[in-house]
Length: 431
Image 1 (cartoon, helix red, strand yellow):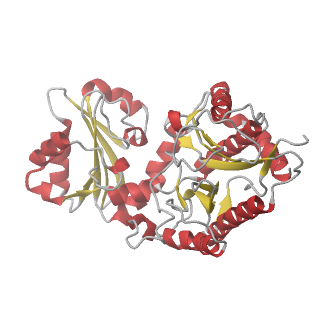
Image 2 (cartoon, one colour; image 1 turned 135 degrees about the vertical axis):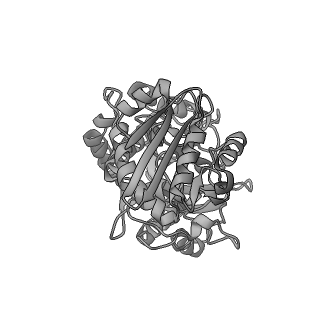
Image 3 (cartoon, one colour; image 1 turned 90 degrees about the vertical axis):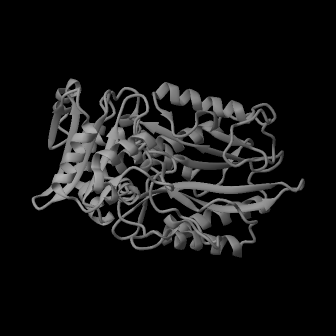
């Protein structure tokens, strides 16, 4: 009950700024700040002199709207670079679009290129003139957000660069350093969205009629809340929300399973606000059987173990700590509590997509962890993370508590975006 009251109070205070009534997006101004304040350091941290992004119509780069080329028609080339005078942003735009692009005031300079000429060729000439030693381009086998350069675009660029083509490197490190850190204004938006997400999950549990309601019914309730507020899905619509009162299904859709007394219910749910920032939060409930006023001892134990594992992960989060170390802190408690193993990492970055760019909070149970599990946490990074406890059901299947919270890394540690779920939500019984 304390959790219910705290999250509803947080939602009442914070929900309005991301409601459907708010039609002005903060993204244009935040985008400018991100380019001016964060991108220069990202290039330096990645050890490159310049970053080139080629944009086009219909099959654009995944980061097009992060740099202002989301409306590209003809091919446009965007260059971010350091020289002896500082950091600069330069766009080579087809003449038919250059005026509108310049009006947005995102880039230091917009060069209008006659449509009979190639913006890629013009950008290549500039690169050759500046004699950059390392030029990052969006080709990456590991990060889809840094893999927007098509094969034919690459061939065109290499031909235009000539000998300088040997200086091309992957932008993977640039994109990692840039996208993984969020501005405080972005964290504030995500905080408000998280309050909305969790409040709706609690409200959804209040709609359940044991023996009548199905998992899909509760998912439909949450879809209706989203439509009413004018927010979008944080991930694939068919799998958001995932309401599951049966055995583990992983990332999946809600089914027509009827919710029964004795069930442990998972809601895995996320929303996207302003068409940009997403949440990823899980809440768990127990359906009381006749005569019960609280969860039985075994379920309470599973809940407490999973919740406390999440607290251990949170307490381990601070700048300089690696993702694999956060994962290990959670697994120490998980193993001590006798949990079955789980196939999921303790957590992941969240922000522009549900599984965003940044350190992976996993790998401690893997002999060959992902490279991002070995990356250190930094202030401004936002994570969704779980506390796990998994157990065998009588039919041999597993059920897992994976209460999922969101937190931002601060200079001194971590801070929850909203109050974490402390108690298992009870469904049925006395209201």
